[in-house]
Image 1 (cartoon, one colour):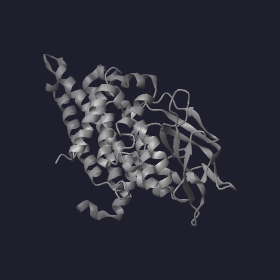
Image 2 (cartoon, helix red, strand yellow; image 1 turned 180 degrees about the vertical axis):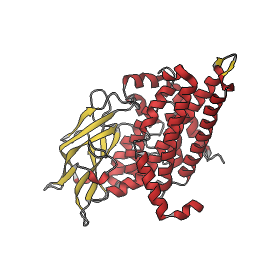
Image 3 (spheres, helix red, strand yellow; image 1 turned 135 degrees about the vertical axis):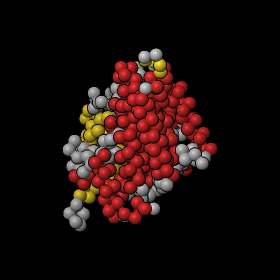
Image 4 (cartoon, helix red, strand yellow; image 1 turned 30 degrees about the vertical axis):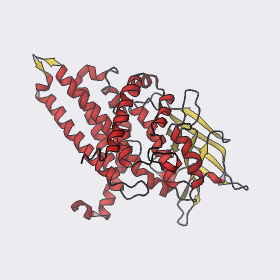
Length: 397
């Protein structure tokens, strides 16, 4: 069995996305990166392909596919345009999959059809100007009003899809984490709210510009100023946000690793092709030992990434948690490996690898964000070390 294509359905999905990439995504990638714009029309076309709700149950309008399918989608898209793919991940995984796993029947039946077609663009808002990995330190608050609704106050930062166009139009719906009090141990009680465009007090503070990479996705600061959210837009019970986070973090990290796999595959392909086309001192440069080192080591890293990522996907259940050790492991390894492979491609290609016309320069810039977003390298190292202390027996399995 091909671990990356375990069924005919998975193979057909990969083929469909590759056709889309070649015909639609690749021709626009350089332009939208240069202009720091999000291709909203192209993004919405993913809904027609069933990709925007790829893991959401089909009874709500999703495609009902598994973690392996999600990995295939992110790998294939990121091999062409990682910035566009990041917007796709923020929508399909951070919002749609989150809602599919944690929302109420009313929330799922009302909202998933809208986000699965692309009529609505979704986002997830956790990070703040002063808080990132420190989730319990969040400053955004939600206070219940006499009529049962909630009033949100705070700012969220670095939100992919926070705005969806050049007019700073906010995302149609945002998954927002906010403090609603303290628990019995005095720790912050974090709860989850669905904030929809048009709700009073919800706006875009600013679009973040001049990013190093991922420039084809929009990143924004969101402002919640006395934002009124109806009681029916609370997800689950008060204080359950950490459960929601744990359920969704594993698939998020898996798909970020899959994006790294796409970057690595494309970088390897570009350097391998160039090593044949380019000659120096009367022979192809692939005949030189240092070039062979770059290509050989990159191939080994790429194949290791691929095996680890797809093995983790095959063992991941979307409806629960339990794969933190490997979801941390794949993101820790794959994101750094992708950056190293993109860097090797630039070395092999020399000056050509350093200019925008040749794709590896963009892949190299985009790869860095994957070492930060969805959990920093340092947080993965900490989690893995703690988990191995608790379950050392997994090393010998």
